[in-house]
Length: 169
Image (tube, helix red, strand yellow):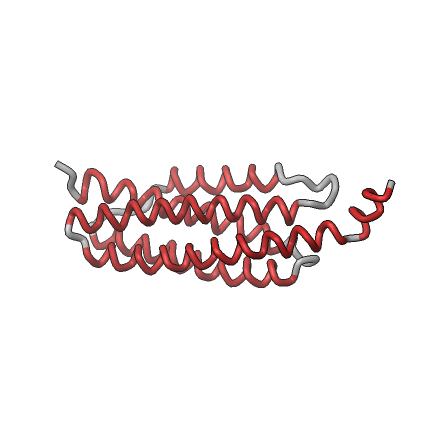
């Protein structure tokens, strides 16, 4: 039998680790997007939203007398740091690639919160369900924005002097 203890709590810990990874990613990106002010502003805005989401997930765990997983949180931060190091700076397209990575990450978060909503409903934890529905809405909004911004950002990159000169050669 699925219970809060054996299924919901571990998945909430996973969600908290994902939010911690997102915080690390967004903090690093916010310092590297000065050429893309719309993206920079949205990343900074979503960083604050993500910090609040991590606290909300933590509050769900605390209601069940559970805590976050420091190991999972650390691994999430490590993976996000490695991801930041591998973005391409060779032709200056790191912002475009960051947009793609963010879009994929947001969709992973959407899937995670859909799973948590269904699980919280199944075990009768309606407060966690409501919190996860709120977070899901925020993640969907960000994913939609990133999907639309991808076109704008790609065009800006392609129209930049460096790419324009290279294309003419």
